[in-house]
Amino acid sequence: MSWYRHFGVAVSEHDSQILCSAAIQLFNDGKTDVDDLASGLIEMFPAPDLLKINAPTSQSIH
Image 1 (cartoon, helix red, strand yellow):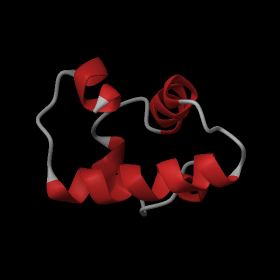
Image 2: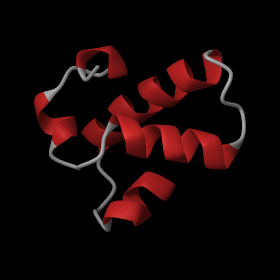
Image 3: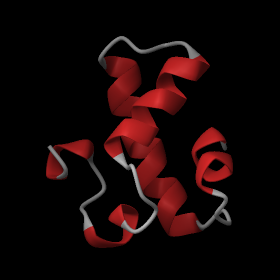
Image 4: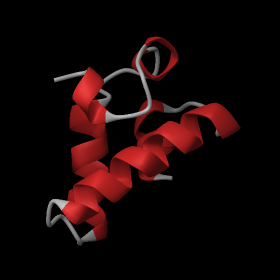
């Protein structure tokens, strides 16, 4: 929810699926704190439009 609040956008099923997949990846990479996960998601997806054009993993962005 922090990502949505940060960008002031409405929650959507599509975006949530992508963000959840990315959050799991971040968690598996050792980011277990909620604030670290939120920061990581904001770094991975620094604009809401990126969720519309990229595949559901952060690998497509980096």
